[in-house]
Image (cartoon, rainbow, N blue to C red):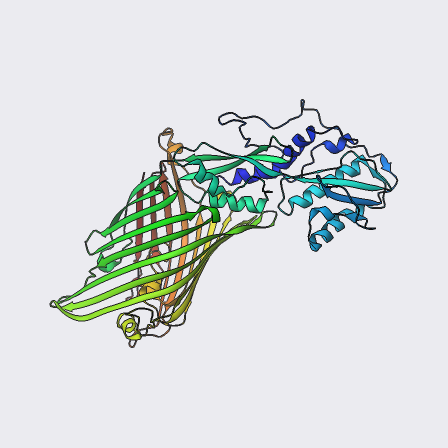
Length: 599
């Protein structure tokens, strides 16, 4: 997503807009007050400048030479500043009773009024100069920007000062014309609707961050929001600069991330249509099969954006069949199915101060799952077990950005009432997982913290925990083993209705073999090498008779991620087991790999 340069541009823009808007007015009585005032902590140039017409760009208003602007005259022009009226630019200045500081037309809350009064009070009952007026403009501008109102122009206009009362005007820019440029595969109305921008709205940093996040939700295009002074005073025109690609992605993958009982090696093929039915919807399908032929699965999903609400509906399902290895004369067979629906709502971006912000996504949904687990002896059924899962899900994903790094939060709360349909009895559940209950609640929380380290290194710490009221079916249990959990162990080495996992990774600065060997621009790659420590402990709420209740895993190792020409992605790791495999004294090591090629 192209968010970073946009936010920098947004912070710099008001001063440029301010300079343009004032150029259309008469020269003020105090000429120094017409100079754009910029926060010293903000960038002083605007890198992304909107074309006045698609395909052409014009620079923002700039001084005609590089000579420094003169400093405001510090000579007092008032013996004492008795009061300040802060008013909208289109309102008539009016003092509120005998108040020294008036701001009736701004529509501020009582808390905001108190903050503004505290900001301006030190200037009262003191001599005032043109330099003082300039400082007042800067102070009020920073006050607005600190509350996310970046598109604002604050000025001391031409005026006759009576009884020491000074008027300061505040102009908040409204969105004018909205253009879409650069789009090839997606209709302009889709981009415009995704942006959620509307002519006449007063933009804030918080709303713009949320708009940009939602506008860039489709992986087949990125949107950069560019601004320029509007043709009408007090407006800013917007261009949604789109970089899109053909909205179909096909991929193939090969890895050893399958259950050992069905053969660890498997391959899959998939395709995603990113502009389904020319409505900006996303439809995906994936087929997976083990090399042994003992397992196959189908996965499909359909994402339907509700553009006017910045929400979307996600429908997805799976169907898989397995024939796990069993000692003769036994044979095992299993079938699992799932149909789910989620309603996704993007939460507003929250600015907590300089360098701090929170983004979030809330999903509400329902799952239906069916698990069939059968065992035969010499072709005759011994166990025929079927259990259905019906559960309501609340799923929250959020991120907190701060000057040191980013913290990601993912929490899943699931409630299974039981008894809604057939095969949801305690007996049906107990046939598959001893002491499992169809009425349950569980919560799974994952926290990921990423920070930058010296010399280009980075650190990622992941904590995962799950609590449950009863034993759960395997589809809801916390799994450990393989990529993403505890490396160095086979996939599905350990399950638990409750559990905890910790992972610490340190990665070196990415490097490029192509650049090192000077292979030319036709070969682009990025390799990231790291070391890790993984730990997990899973347990059941109630142990099965004759079995232990806790399983602990731990490993250390190295991992490598390689991206080649943005087409091929390779993940490889080698983990050494610090704890022996369950039921044995073997430590040893195991290598995980996953290769994905997509076009």
